[in-house]
Image (cartoon, rainbow, N blue to C red; front, side):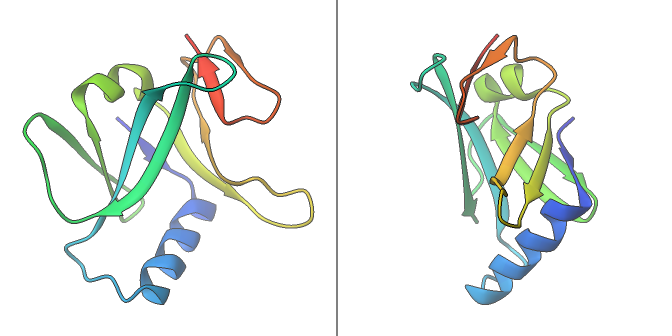
Length: 108
């Protein structure tokens, strides 16, 4: 399961409204090779499902990921932090054994 915090839910709704995205759009998250710690997160809006996509809905937000990425993201919560020291969107991933200083990459 992938989870969505209230803070991320509000920001996703705001961004989707600003970009005039319809209800057929969802949040696509994935994990790619790269970054300081070896793996990096990717997040975007999408409206096309692919074979073997894993689909979750939490807190009113539909989140989709590919099967390979789900192995790294299982039980991860998408969060958002604003303010002066805010990070923007970030992933609270219990599977990560270490993260880099900027928080953009991780290792398992």
